[in-house]
Structures are given as structure tokens and as C-alpha cells.
Amino acid sequence: MKTFIIITAFFVSTMLTAQTQYETGMQKALSLWGEGKATEATALFERIASAEKTNWLPNYYIGMVNTTEAFNPKNKDKVASLIEKAQDAIDQASVISPNNAEIMVLQAMLYTAILVQDPMTNGMKYSGLAMEQYYKAQAIAPNNPRVMFCKAEFEIGGAKWSGADTKPMCAQIAKSIELFATFKTDTPFAPNWGLDRAQEALKGCK
Image (tube, rainbow, N blue to C red):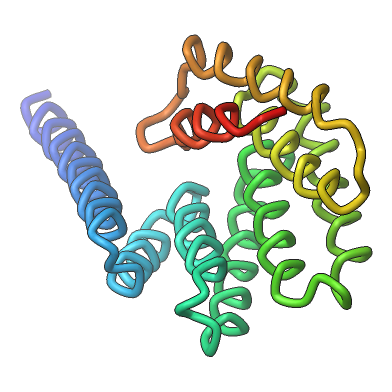
């Protein structure tokens, strides 16, 4: 019995240590990203992903960091590699966590990053692909504020080209802000971004 208790205590201690290492690593990677050190953040997220093979979040953040960097005009010469790295990470996250609305929003964002590189060439194809992801995410998680806000923001971008009325999309952004106020994440480090962007978007909404 004593041996069993010792083994159990060792097992629990090991699990707690592993959890602490994961949390410490994720916090460090997110801090690096916040400091503008995207390459270092990606490398750390990749190390975490290799250790946390059943956790979709490290790959999600690899995808998010590289998608965000692909929008930065300063990275014009690196866009192709950023998009490729982001897509690989999104694919891996999707395998671990299929039918995940957060991953679908990220995929739509990556399609948008591809679209803006050459709107005339990529517009029709990638606009359709992005909207497909938003509709899927909406069906799964209609009250997720990121789904509602990002879909509306994307549609406003399209409306500027087509001349469509943006009032319905602005109403959706306003509603997403209400949802942000009550939205709760179910796991540590789960996506919880977007409120500041939605508030800023609403200021310029017509």
C-alpha cells in the first residue's frame, strides 16, 4: 500500500510538473508574440506542440502568429513562407480538434491574408473560401463573438467593393461586442481576443 501511495504521488507530481511546463511555455510564447518577436514565439509554440500532441492550442497560435505576420506589409518578401507555415499549423490543429469554430475563423483569416496579396487574382476564389469557413463556424458556434465579428468585418470589406449596405454588418459587430462581455473560455489559453478590434471597427461603422 505504501509503495502504491508513493507511485501515485510520483505520478501526480509528474503530471503537475508537466502542466506547469506547458503553462509556463505558453505564457512565455504569448509574451514573446506580444513583444513583437514573432519568430521566437513561433519556435516556442512549435516546441510546445511537439510535446502536446493532443492539444490544438499550440498549433492554433502558430497559425495565428504567422497569419497575422502575413498581413504586415513589412513581411512582403516572406509572405509565402508565412502562409505555408500558418496553413500547416491550421491543418494540424484541425486534425486534433475537428469542427472547431475558432480554427475555422483562423482559416478564414488566412484565406483573407492570401486574398489581399493580389485581390484581382485571388479575390473571387479566396473570398468564397473565407465565407465558407465563416458559415461553418457560425453553424457550430453562432454565439461565439469572434465568429460574429470576423464574419461581419470580412463582409464589410467586400461591401466596400460592391457598394452593398453595411448597416446589417455593423449591427452584427455591435452584437458581437455584447457577446464578448459574457463569453467564457473553457480551457486555459483558449482564444479570447477580438473585443478591442470590434470596438474600433464599430467606431467607423456606417
